[in-house]
Length: 234
Ligand code: AR6
Image 1 (cartoon, rainbow, N blue to C red):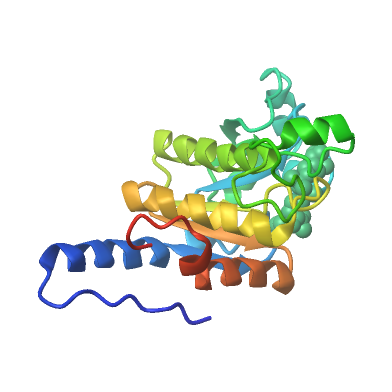
Image 2: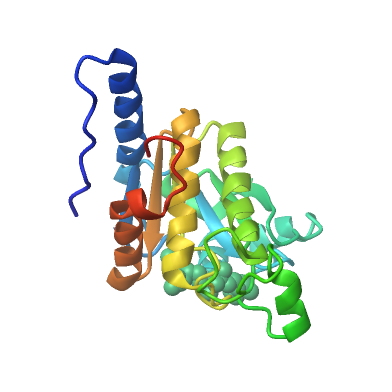
């Protein structure tokens, strides 16, 4: 899908440099449809992200697929980690996935959307009186903040482990029911923000399980000028 072009201000060197950096940051992000446990090794992906639960001991969805592919060694290793709170992340070796060139798995625990209990829902609103459903402004619910935290934690691990190419599934959008277009904006927004400031990882690939899921990411990218908080250009 075509990305909108930026229009550098002619004759303004610093504006041109800034635009170049912004274009470059978006160009380092890819969206791919597939199974995150069987990516083509020629992509050079050296770390993948797991959408785990707080036990870190495996489950369904992408977590189940990653545990199956990595093998029982991963579960044994994770039994020593003491779990992981929602919004945080922990890194492990990739065990059985190492033969595909993957060295690390970054397990992160996304938020459940929406909390089923009304009083929990009220607590989940970041701003008093703000709606707590998908009509809430992006960033106004506690779940938005927790999902953003997952991405920031994962990027911090990528920097720590000097990752070249990081693959990330759509955290929280399966069993945990986070609205997919909203989650795609949070994922892209934070990836873009990180890549603007950091050289590591060099590339980020969002791995979607269906064409429809990928379309949410393409839409988030193509419409970023409309929904991202703008401090000048994005
Ligand atoms: N590769 C890429 N994406 C996948 C794959 C795969 N192999 N399998 C599923 N997806 P989910 P969550 C997509 O439910 O919502 C687990 O039981 C899927 O289509 O895996 O964060 C954990 O143990 C969806 O878009 O994770 C937790 O208990 C996305 O991955 C709970 O589910 C995330 O769906 C976590 O729920």
